[in-house]
Image (cartoon, rainbow, N blue to C red):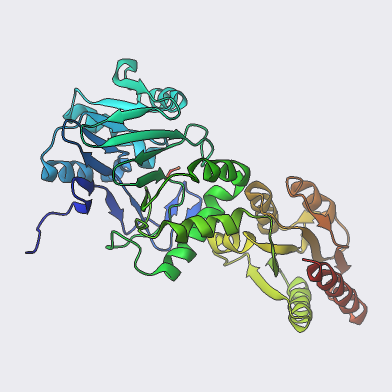
Length: 394
Ligand code: FEO
């Protein structure tokens, strides 16, 4: 029989009641969302109590409220795993509709929700790490998991059904009508991009948090963006690969060129690296999708930033790329800089200063005057040799 309801059933009495945002193309006014996203909110109906796990972005509150009407239950608890507004933004409206509901979250999340939404303090119950909550025939265990990707984050483990609710962690920005992962290749790419943009700066915290859930028997992972994983190993193993110290034989080249000199150097270096069997990922910063650039940084051994000199320093697009790489803290091992100038400037010094978070070795930069000559190409060959030598040790 066809169900005309728009809530989705994960297991009996466990529902997806969130919202799909097909049209969203930018997150935080920063991160491109080529595939839209979803704000997954889940409802667990126990024999005695009912809990709502996270809410949705405030722009989609009406979707959540319609879903809650369809399920026709009262809500006793709102579990807030994370204070960011795309998951917490509808809490005030849910509290208005279900006035006796209590918000359960970490102590830090409580202070943040009070700051953001002015929710009265008496509405909260603080969850300590490993606290449990009985809904009757279902038991929730709260697991503090800070810094994925804010300091207040936590997970919930539903013991009887072996479902781990991870909020942002392990998610993907992917709008899809499928509740569960159907195409692992597609989700792998979306989840890697999401990891690069949001989680990569927190590799150390992720290691600790993965350790923490290592002994749980998990049959399903339900994140708050993208499809639900009924093969948890798929995403856990992907994260283990991304957070490891292993790098690939890949050079990422974010570049910008104003009059063709820098791009001539980039073209030459790309070919020189390819001839040496090195994978190359050039990104023309004038048109590049910053999310794809971030994704390429996840496991590349080397970054070569290519920039002309303008107003005495690096081109602003190259400055942005360097800033981004520094903020995202990829596990890259080597960095270099190439480019051209007209009469002088501090491009190398400026870019070097900007990437201090990266624990990298600097390969001798090649910054030349004017359009490249034969001798300049020889220097790029030398750089390619050096990269080849270092990559062989990986
Ligand atoms: Fe999906 Fe950090 O919010």
